[in-house]
Length: 107
Picture 1 (cartoon, one colour):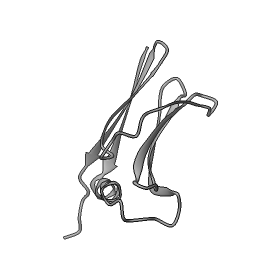
Picture 2 (cartoon, one colour):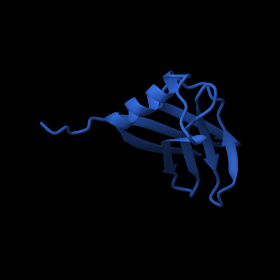
Picture 3 (cartoon, helix red, strand yellow):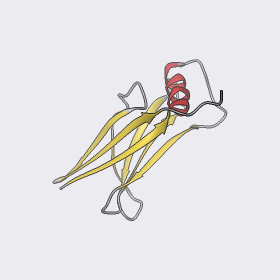
Picture 4 (cartoon, one colour):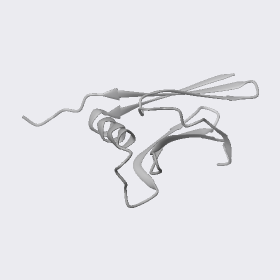
């Protein structure tokens, strides 16, 4: 079965997360950066897509079952937060699409 989840992220948040990924010299005070995005699928599974403060920083994409157990991770081969993350578990496919939207700015 195929499960899809889509999450729109504020343009300012995208820029912040991507700048952290691009700057290998920058370090945050904690291991996890404030770039964590969670989606829930119809069957109760969840996926977390987050930027991890490492050397260099990377995107950690993890799929959890309905009980909260980690059942799949993706290789950290992403250079920006936006995109499609696909998890294949037995006969099921879980697709997370992170997209952006523009933020209204005060004039």
